[in-house]
Length: 155
Image (cartoon, rainbow, N blue to C red; front, side, top):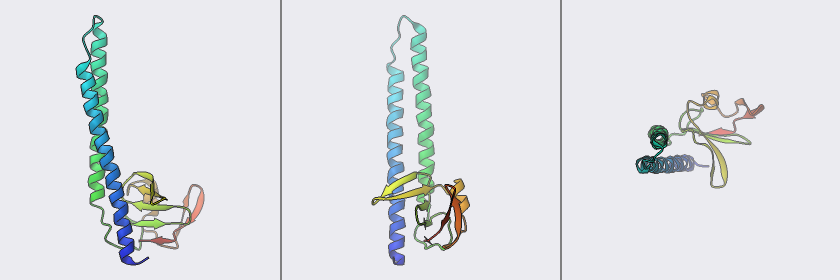
């Protein structure tokens, strides 16, 4: 793979991550609207406590989705700041790490994603595995899933 292909690949991973987070943001906004609508439409009944409980539950649900929205917005902001235009020789934020059985993109904590039929773990730079990989080079090994894993390449 040429340097330009490596950079293009990492840029496509970053774009896929941004789209995934944007999707999560849209879902959280929709859920907030639905929770607000449910809280507002809770009709007053002869059982007055039921009305108050329903409204309170709607507000709690809205608050939960608002926290998720805020987290996703922060995650998107962090991901957008990741530089994928550099070929890294050590594992760090913005690096792609290929191992025999797994591949990792250190940029955002999105978990295992299927990109072009290839499973890739999107790791937050602050995740325990990312900190374990930090500053390792191709040829170095680390313990992953109780198995000694060798880094084949980093870029």
